Length: 140
Image 1 (cartoon, rainbow, N blue to C red):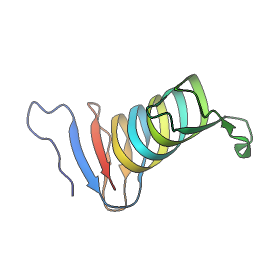
Image 2 (cartoon, rainbow, N blue to C red):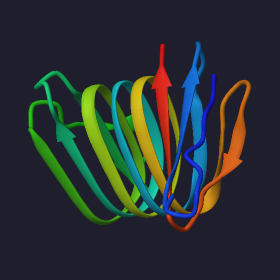
Image 3 (cartoon, rainbow, N blue to C red):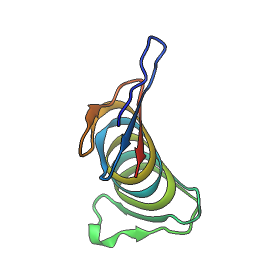
């Protein structure tokens, strides 16, 4: 099921994607993910991670480090990574925001807002980011 907000006043488009699978996206701009599930991301920019439920498992590895050596940062309610280049894994109920380039795979339920230039894809749908932003809601 998918729907889009339309009309001259519409600044963002809202699309609901239901079913199993994952959301894959990459591009430059602003990404906001608020969801319960798993996020795997490569990021180049400013990153903010908020652990809403106190259950998030957060692992981070900076560019140039061995990807086998993810640093487990579980236990902090907030992670602020300025000018970060590297990989991030988040599992649990969390909010992740990136300003800059990101490529990610999100699996679970929640929503994401993508603004800038990029592409997104699920098993049955795909689209492009817009300057005003697109909000995608994921339902298991």
